[in-house]
Amino acid sequence: MCTGLRYMNDSFYFGRNLDLDYTFGQSIVITPKNYEIKFKHEKSITNHYAFIGVAVVVEDYPLYADAINEAGLGIANLNFPHFAEYATEVQEGQLNLAPYELMLYALANCQSVAEVKTAFHNLNVIDIPFNVQMPNTTLHWFVADKKQAAVIEVIQGKVKITDNPANVLTNSPSIDYHLMNLAHYANLSDKQPTNQPFDMPPFGEGFGTIGLPGDWSPASRFVKAAFVNEHSISEKDEISNVTQFFHILDSVAFVEGVTTSPRGPHDLTMYASCGHPESGNYYYKTYRNNQINCVSMSKVDLQSHTLFNYPMIDTQQIHQVN
Image 1 (cartoon, one colour):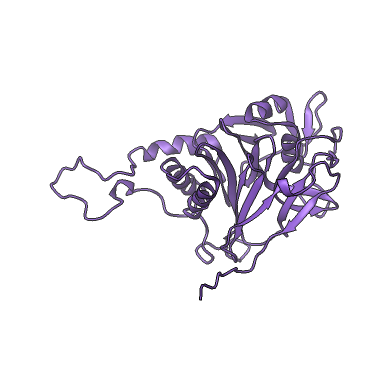
Image 2 (tube, rainbow, N blue to C red):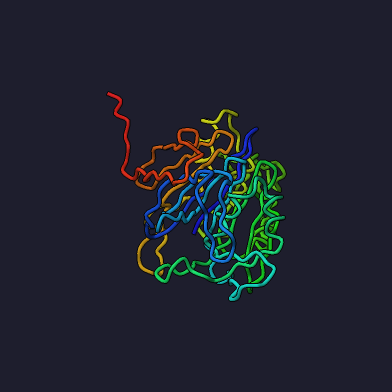
């Protein structure tokens, strides 16, 4: 369960809520320009774009959940159960990537959604796990830049890249369904209703949003996040935009206890993230720590050959006033 967000307010911001019932040891990881990225069936890459995001590092290899690169591209993987079905064989003449390699390839090589579409025109996503202890999860990918957003899905082994004018993404069903489903909510408005059959004016604010979903299902979160994002108003400086970004994500965040995983524990929003490619800053907060924290690519040597790893601060930080 997750929600991805592309936010534009003079500048481009990208991030997500990651909703799970367990932690996977995530941290903020910077991959510098000269770190060698290895692939199972493609040539390794060095001297690429630097990028920053949330990942777990296994055997000195960054497995990203979401990230931005210095060129202006953001990408996040979100759970896509019952629909994702990867290819089973390598295809000669195609770009053969494992699911966990897709983000690394795009971030290393591409500066826009248009370039991702070109690079992935012959993409074959193969069901090859990172190792035997880490089987692949069912994913689709949310990609965005300052001009547009798109979704990459693999259904019955076939890759499809779909433009996403809603600028948000959640989980199953496919993006085609979510975009069509928005038509059911065309009546929603940030303004009070005026065309009424009875002379009964609204007795409170927010009557224009009656019918806006409030549950935590993927389709409902998609609608609510899209509506809140579309009607969001903020000052245009970075701090104001980052603050607003987290407010938008908060509108669809999981509160511990409201949903229970089939595995038993409760789902919750493990972390929320917001990247700003223009500054190279990556912001985050966690369920246990409401404070917004920042890691900056500008603070490290991006010509390095080794990863930079910053564990998330996951204990509450309270500012004592008196």
